[in-house]
Image (cartoon, rainbow, N blue to C red; front, side, top):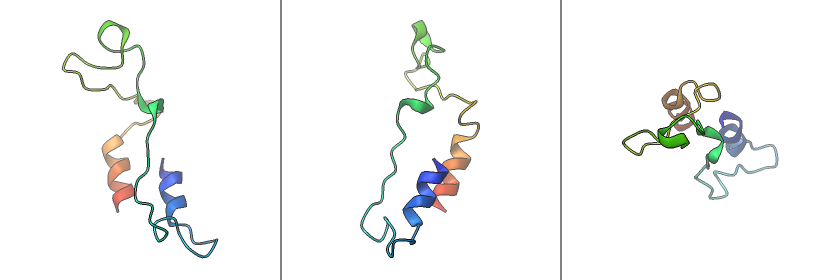
Length: 68
């Protein structure tokens, strides 16, 4: 994810993706802790998705780094 964010700022081709108008990075299903939630899902009892902490040990820090 950090690599994707840094790639958006890369100007090696003359203009960055941010300068070209892109402003979103998508995080697909790879962040989910599949099979660890309620009834084998990836959600907790409140309906919130469970994050695979081996792939994303600190999601909040990652997001803060990207926004910086």
